[in-house]
Image (cartoon, rainbow over all chains, first blue to last red; front, top):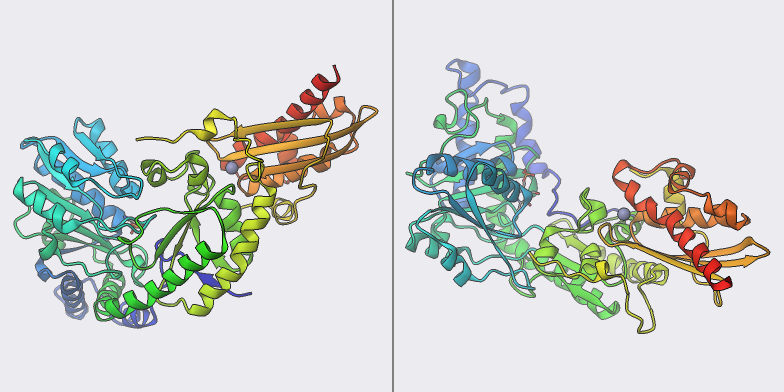
Length: 402
Length: 122
Ligand SMILES: Cc1ncc(COP(=O)(O)O)c(C=O)c1O
Ligand SMILES: [Zn+2]
């Protein structure tokens, strides 16, 4: 059976060049980079080289990069660390309703400790109102945390404008760039961000490694206390192989990003057009243009996302869904909810996130198998062809507003 | 995640469709989970002769719908009323814990259809 992977926003395979670079650091160069002896000395330059590679990709200096264990750690560190270090200045944080749970649940946890959080709404395309952002800022605001790009819709937020607003009001700006890095240019100077998080496994490095950019001079309480690693900013013996892998992945991302952007976007656009041409009653979730080049999120009316995914899976296609039944909770995706997508449509939201390994053949295969699957599930759906009789269940009609 | 039986009923659902001039129709919905299920009955001499279903829902919802139709056909009305959601899940060799709420639909929809049948007869 064909195997087509279109879930690159969930994770990516480790790239061969990355794996190759990592392998010597498991056995041959196994040392602890903090050690003074030969074993440690052989390893610490590799960690520093990786730091340079990461820094170059996002246009900062190597000293501003801290290696972390994952994107979620970075978001926790940036937000909790700011809350702790600036709590004498204020207790107000501004974020959005569509952040990754790593940001949302961190903010929720801080609310329990007495912090106040403004969750900015988005419009039906999933975009922010920057006037609302500016109006939300008070003299108690210590942090603006807004993602660079959204993992579900691929929407790209105007970080440069947000950075300018933050600067004007002298508020710290953190951005979760986990989905943006490698897919679009990310420049911390141009964007005026103070803190930024990236995660290795979204860009062909292993799972369980990431980086936190901390602008020079930014006071940030550590999340993980312990040894003196990372200049006291993050304790814990370095995950040397993964850090080396992250460095190589960042270097490759920098070299290839423009070429990948054009190629992957052309494939994504072909998929999008093909679906809209062939299947009636499809809704695009997200902004028509201001989106990552690889992401397509659509809802197929009358059918539920998980049953669609299982059918795709039977054809070897890996995608993901915003349906409650795939989220492990009873509610469909909070991002769809925030965009006021009808609940039934939210349950049918399906995300294709392409990668550099996808080909036009893959896209054409998806376009071949998708329409009959959708049609078969629609024929099975009590919501389809109701002959003008709308669904009477009030619950199913609610449009959730945040 | 799903048992082989669930996947079998999901990929080859039994008794999908509608029954024209059905003797009873029941629809239940659970918008929070995103599952809505409709059952059509044909009843003769108090025995369920045919059952068809239409379901909007996840893999578990479709499989339980399919299973409940198989379990109900040939049963008397009273026997069918004794079918429980738990029995449907069990017949599928169980459902993942997070999916138990979906299976609540299957027997409920059948019972709704029987209620509708009884009311229309009365
Ligand atoms: C936008 C965003 N932020 C944070 C994360 C968390 O990253 P990690 O899986 O490395 O903890 C993800 C990954 O799903 C993400 O998409
Ligand atoms: Zn379900």
